[in-house]
Image: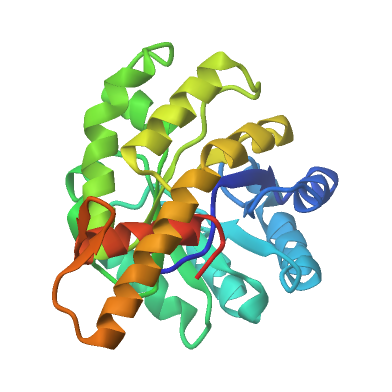
Length: 281
């Protein structure tokens, strides 16, 4: 399991260098420079060059990724070629509208020997239907993200629908990601404000087990980070559980008890995941 923290992931258009630099100066765990929805066709090449320059400048200091154009466009191969040349400064390539294992496998191949990882943005009915296959396609895949805007439009769902209507899809994507041992990130709330609706939706995603969320505006970063950061009491319990398990292993003990609980592999895995969310390995 990869333990990169993605509690708050801020997306910024690579075509607007001012906004991109503002995002890169933020406290978001990860910044995704967008070559897709936020960039007009005439600006694709310029945005790609700007992204490469910003990755080279900031990639050694913080987590920087690039959302490329999808395989249904004419720009995807140029995007992947450029990303393959950005070197280790580029954390991941985010593939939008990910639908088939073949697309992920091709993206993996086109990245070649690059250390850059992949993330899959799932935002079509086909992608949700085949999510288990997508998650297990390549060892380069770090995370999956739910894209609510495009998915909602494809489903004919009212953008003002209550967040609870997404629960079955959230659960489906979460289970597939966990079975594959990868992170699962909630998609952006379709507003740019930090209000009770945004916070309620993110608390719900965190309660389900999501690792973090995309945000559309810097003013949402603080709340998202706080929501997806484990509380100190839970972290303390996780540390105690791992320490007890380690001590028992050293003694050669089979059964391990901590307080009134019996520790097992599932609890240890949960403790490690919690500590990883807090930045502890």
